Length: 264
Image (tube, rainbow, N blue to C red; front, side, top):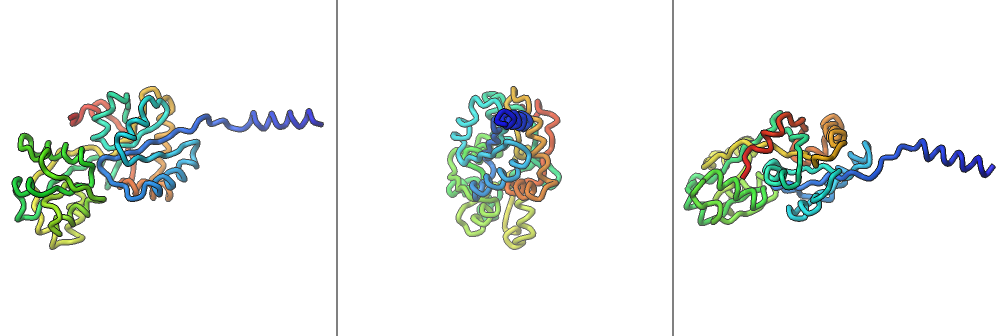
């Protein structure tokens, strides 16, 4: 009887699917401020757990994120396209997916100021509000005003969202705001009076939205990426992807161009 018991136990163990080690999705965005990392992780983990041994780990600091993914061979990383272009060679990353918002995979940033302050010298003596981190903000401003020295000298005020950057200009907390075109369009509907006071000083080059990438040697990366592509068709998944200010993922069709585009 005891022998039969051990045989049955062995058969049950043998028939049980073996998933192996958990695969982690690492997240850091230089272009988006997350209000609640704990909530983001909980929602992401709940969605991913339905599809396999996956977990989600967000980071608020770039250095900690890059140290964590160093040498990892079986993981996915979710990061801004600007960040991806700056580290993909060193980390040997291949883009898998690009974020989609309102049917577009690209966005453009604009620098706006109140009409009375729409002057480089006026801005230089004040500050620029931005929902992106300081490094990314200075990079975009440098691209907008090459040779002007504005990017290195101006004070950057980091705020949670683009709308906060616009409000800071409206309340004269900062002289200008670096925002996306989408945010400016939203302001036109939300606060027409403030919108009329704004003047676009410069426009940046279009850049891809958030990128999902994988180490070059990760053989099952496509399988994990397909899980993320299920998000828009799932209520819980849609709730999570909205927390990233996206509404879909699209397969990257031209990885060579994405890697080379806008390298600084």
